[in-house]
Length: 94
Image (cartoon, rainbow, N blue to C red; front, side, top):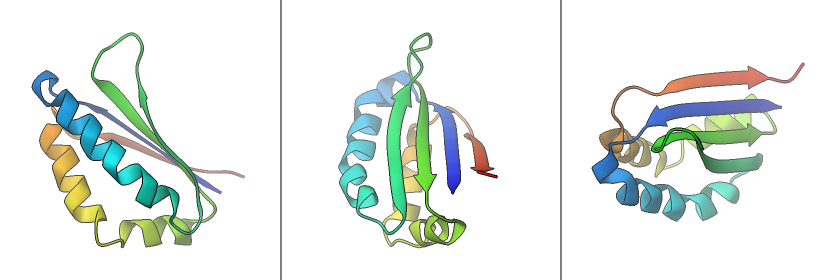
């Protein structure tokens, strides 16, 4: 099992566009092979500090997710709303 946490800060003026962008993609991502969970969280103490939490059955399933036709455009759009580079934690259950 693979877990991915992607932490980033979204520009205040981009908040609504960012939420719509992620919200629009969730149904497709949830249908992907091996997706156990894919959800958006917001830090309750710091507005616009978000984390995408991902849980996949295997590394292969995560790699298939990264190969989806919508993944790269989605990533580019999200990064356009971000104040900087995300912090990404990839964790494997042992």
